[in-house]
Image (cartoon, rainbow, N blue to C red):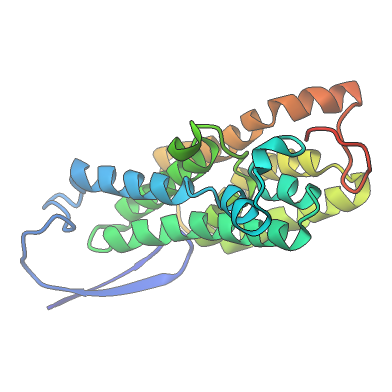
Length: 245
């Protein structure tokens, strides 16, 4: 038996005891790389986890309503909260974040016999595809949420300190401006920089690209909110005006 000890993308130490020689799908190649089939499994599982529309399901099961017909039509936690279901909104945020965290955890488990670089890349790919799964769920004709809670869960698994710092910024902006969209956009802007700054590992260019892409897609999803912010028509959290956000 061979013991492997290395640092995960989240900074935690992972100790694995593996057979010295065993040919299997989840084992790395002699050069330390992983087979393409494993990466396909990682991104497929991550997408399926991310595509679970918790906001849609919770509102449908509990209130017998389609959240897509309420407010902005978004399936995310903010729209669920604004629909009047505060408890369901909070639960949606927790579950959406949990699926992002789970996607990274599953990727790290599947690539546990590979080197640190492979584990990092697989974990980030899983995070990115979990976010994309939330945004474009096949079950809802590829019309999902904006990925804020799911991205938070992804980065909470990858770099907890960066994710919590971004959450602090999000809370501060919401408190000062009452704009949830502005808070989400600013948090997404600073999160990749916080991740690269606060993570103990020396990440590759590929890893850094995926970090920025994961946050960039969240910002792009807020393009309509950006336009409304520029025109002064964006809905403030807690206001009575029923405007999309």
